[in-house]
Image 1 (cartoon, helix red, strand yellow):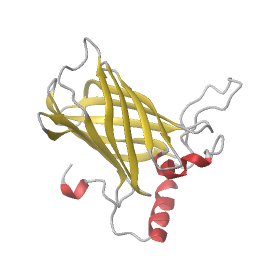
Image 2 (cartoon, rainbow, N blue to C red):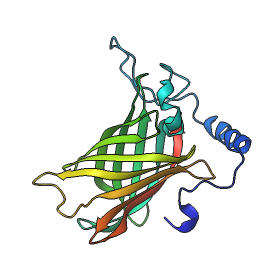
Image 3 (cartoon, helix red, strand yellow):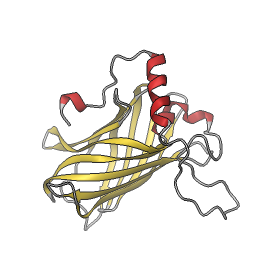
Image 4 (cartoon, rainbow, N blue to C red):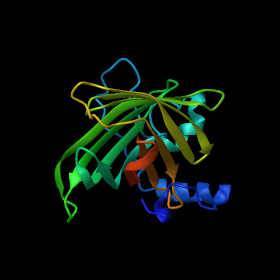
Length: 213
């Protein structure tokens, strides 16, 4: 992402940020992720207006809950530079964690999907000391633990604590950092940087719009 697209909060007052979010959520407030509805336990929900109440311990992560879609840019040793589309589902079931599901697909120069990309699945937790704990598994054969803290009420930074790669996984995926944040337009921006040699280099970044929640 360019400097103008970085998910760094703009100079918004608290009231203006809430008002902007309320206007944005009007477009998606009556939608939710599909559910079977036949389990004897609460269904996951990506809509804070439906399903179980969000656990009080997750309030610092509340703005992440929803279904987000958009596009981004990647530069990986496996595929080089390419554009991708993404859907990110951040949901909860009333317990003290968020579920995290990401799907990506490669795009051609006209923005058409050409093939499937990476997927991630995991969980986010946050303690009373504001330490964020994230466990992720990647479809490429990676299992990762990340820790971090909220930078403020609209952005969250994570760093790799453990990155394990399977025999068939990406050989050059080093530890890294991620930044997630609500941009001034209330889109969700994120950047993943990975250690190459002794320096961090951008690997993937995207700007996503809330479509549910």
